[in-house]
Length: 539
Image (cartoon, rainbow, N blue to C red; front, side):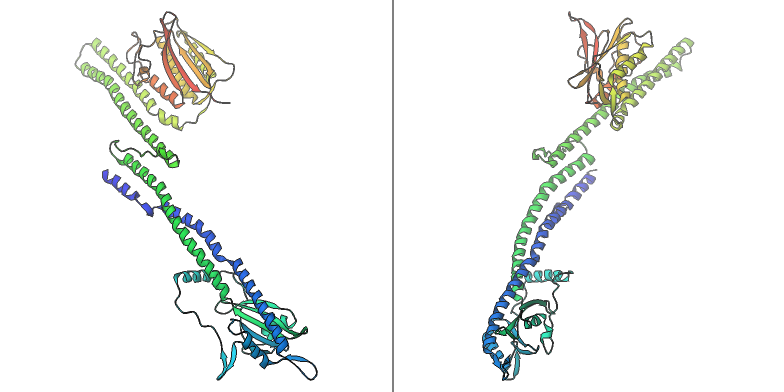
């Protein structure tokens, strides 16, 4: 038994590994991560940065196109004007040096005249580009890259057209250039094969409102990407701090909830498997929360359990004592009848045996009724019982026997006196009290049954004209197997369980039953009175 208790106690000491701790951590972390994931998306922020970059390209393009229109144009003999490729390249090198923007100039025929990515050098055209930054990739960058890969994998995210460069580029390759050749600036956002954003802005090159070509400025959106990643780093840093605080608070919350619950569970194991009553349920009622309520309920339940066990032990001891008396008498009579040869003596002994057998039969029947009463009352469904009608019906049955004392009823109301209960069991109580009253009342006595409503309760009284109850025994008469019968009554006629069963039934109906003596003005005992109080049903 002790090993079983130890095993159960050991199995419940899970601490931070308990399911309750995991659930609290998971729920709190999940609630925290929902807004964090939303904040890290930053789609509106990125779009606003892209729009700002396109506006900057537009301003740069307009300034450069004005310079081209005024300095890199030559007039033909017929008076038409056109851009001079050599002049445009020279001007491009002078104006676009170290600004991080690629410029391409297209003629009105669609031919590309110049590209700032290729500058003429000693050995031929030289491609100019930025080298990747030195150093490795940090943990925060890896997290951000992983997040971006997931976002890019999702459908509908960044549905930009793909940026491609033909070997021989023309205006037909770029929609924005075609729009610029028609006299309107246009911008475009694309992604290259590596997933980087490419921003481009095309503006017309004009002289006196005549379109001479188109200038397209383009750049990668590294500034935009870096700005978004910086914000994501900030968010991740705040998220990490908030997650740490959330984990600590979750562990604290799981502790103040799980720790007392484990103590209550261990105490329940001790009560279930332990020997003796030295271990009590911990008292957490001072907490004033649901765990305190649970602790109080478990303590009350345990006390009720011990009280019920005490009652069962006492009942078993009383039953054993009461059954031994008729069994002893029966054994003595059986042993004697075998040695007696006188027929008269044998008849007397057989009569004693029959009385003892009948006494045992009544005793066992009453014990059986008392033992199953609790379970029956807990399962039965309460219903409305009209106390007035019940009293009248019981009295009418008694009036059939003319040898009985006179029965009178006094229902002090014209309305129904209704209670919630079991009509059969309440009738059993009243029959027990009426039988008691008949036993002690003289032949010419009167037994009065009264009922009234008082302060939300139905009060029932049963009065008799008998000798009354022995002083000091007003509570003892409701004990099991208590008997105080008239001298002329045959011994063993009653088991002494009637009033005990009656009290048990009334207690189950949330009522009370009490006994007292009726006395006259001079203090003389006029008889006994039993009073039942039951909660009245509210209509």
